[in-house]
Length: 135
Image (cartoon, rainbow, N blue to C red):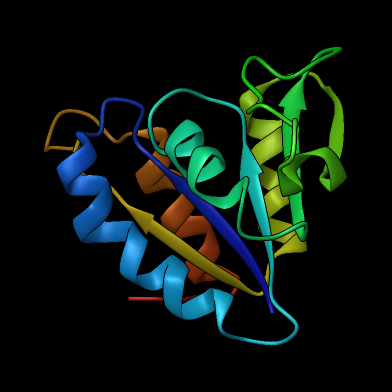
């Protein structure tokens, strides 16, 4: 099970707890679970901070030469994470993550009738490729 976790950059911590943490904790109980995350602010950084002491089975994807954010590796599992960069833009990075995952955890709260967020576009892409949404 490869779980891509993503979401909006302006998430409140309380909403992160409500929409993500239960699913992440339950997923960690699976034997062969690994996680794919990106390096943007908000959901991505909160996921990294939570997982840094929980598992070494994390791949962090980023644009350019190095991640915009990466957690402390001193006495954490984050020092064993795979870091994959060199993507040219968000779309290329996100498509790589979507193709690589089998499951996903995501919540969009920024879209409305006038604007479709990147998070919603990624959710739609995952569903179109029959990735399993963990809800």
